[in-house]
Image (cartoon, rainbow, N blue to C red):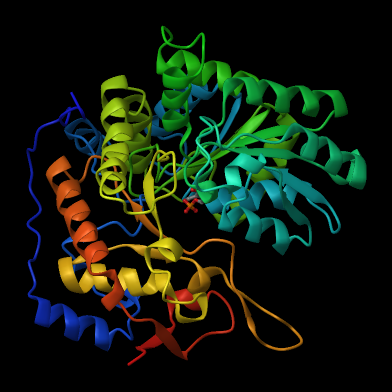
Length: 458
Ligand SMILES: *Cc1c(COP(=O)(O)O)cnc(C)c1O
């Protein structure tokens, strides 16, 4: 079979509004051609992000009714703690309301000015939290991970030589932690192999540096290991996860990804002293240690979601649904980043629209067209989001790639929805010469893509 059918059936439906092309043209114009400014209920298929957009199961919804909202010692906290300990194996479990708070708490505790934090590729919030503490976030992914056409099976791997070189260059006292992001979100949701995890762990141990995972998509990473790495075919996802985490000292987690919930996160670690200090901070900024900014019912939904995400039938569907969308596009010649990662398909807008220069935002041209034509929301990850300014000339320095990300929410859309998305993009591809670029009318000083107003070039 080309792709597995959905391993769930529909019990509750959320009707989607179908708008006309004229309505969408008006909406996007009013939004300043910025997809972030479109009201979500005017979108037919929303592929803006896979974060916090999962559909919960009947089992999770049932769990919400068992929420124990006691200020201290909620029974849902104990269920959550026991579940995290079982899968991740770390002794101390600290709930937070989302992943970036886990990062902030961790870094507040361990980073000082001038420190350096290596990672395969830092996710935006991780980098921002490192830099906020006046430390330097450095990316050590293998070169293959930066090449959109390289078919390496584990493009999220850390380059061990780059890691060692960084530790040599700055000295191990300035490297208070080594991070590894699974799957590597900013590198296209590409997996890290168990072999590489072992090697990173060995480097960390050799230098006496703590090693933490950014574990947001840990289950998706485990599925890729099972599928692609020798020796793991007969292991369960739980066994693979337990082995993976056994090599580390802790992790940060956004449960909005592989926790299969709409809000939540945590920090887990073996070190008691760190956990004590962080818990004291938690009480100051998030809440008491048995709820950490969440309701008891949320903790119950996370506990149940973390068990469900280990289901191999679910993961096979999840990974193959993403791959299926990529393959439909690839077959028709649409340029995409390959191999397809776990949670999203990335269209290469520079090759899709070679007649639109980076200064005119080819990715945004595709994002806008996809909305106007088909009611689909995607997101530009290119010059609009990532370009830097030359401090001397003020001229834009475009990033290496102009991408459009189609992130797939978990258990939300059917394969037929994916086919609709593919057909829309293929149609646009056939008429791609007609697309025009954009100029910026208004931009903020930082994170401009969220609020920028654009104008089509006539
Ligand atoms: C989403 C994400 C985070 C941050 O989590 P939030 O819940 O959005 O705060 C950190 N790292 C990675 C890799 C992520 O994908």
